[in-house]
Image 1: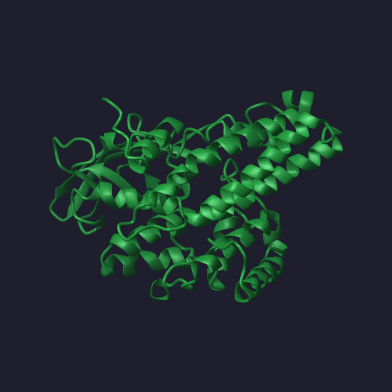
Image 2: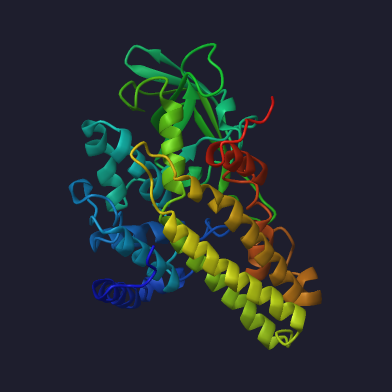
Length: 395
């Protein structure tokens, strides 16, 4: 892994910086650094318009092959794009789930007809997706899925419940892992279906969090129908396809995440200086430790940014979620300690997003970092069993 830019990459980095500087202005200026984790409810229509603006200039799906509407960028240039986008304060991407998760999954597993149907809407920023994985009894343990689907003529009929479904209330489509073989257990008998969110029989209920926001949702399927050909892979191959999606989730987009974390840490450092606590030796050590951990996060991500021919993560990449979740949570705790006694009060009525400053929002939202996307306990099992080859946990 060589973390230095070539002359070509430096020129590309400058191109992105110039474009972001020229375009994140006017009506889009209010979106700067908004819409990220814990703030995803903010400026949703405006961020969708920004997504279409990006698409019009060819800045969506930059790492996809050109035949599917992408730019076909090299891995190094794809990394540069996401880093510079985050550094410039680019808003949270409304099309993140489609571009970062579903699109690469379709490119790897779908038929050419499915690619032709679904990829253009992601590239153009006109169709938005959410992920139907977790359930009340199948959160980090995805293999415990109980949502079912049966084939009725030329349609799949889906019944069940999903939970923690980010952005479901604003999405046009959902990719749903469900059990299509009656009596099957664990990883067997699952299928990966695509369904419109405005289909009859689908109900979305927002889940309100301590941040006062509700980007997570419960989604109920009551005999909801989708065409029989809206299945990715063969019936029963859903686990393989779902794991491919998770592998892509741990990919290059984490570099933009790292830059967003760095921006948050810089904000904490600025507060520490204003409040006169930056000279405290213990506080300086905590800040320095987080700076070092951010550099480690970036370097480890760079050396593990590959998915093999089976759409599986390389073993070294499996530590990523466990690492950044705890780093980010520690950052939220540092933000509260920097605020001191002011951390105990908010600007308005508790329980509303507007009452919270950036530091409070960071702290409250990072409480969930070690749970969503696979809890710490599950991540350690994954590392032990899949990366290190240790015996599976007894059941």
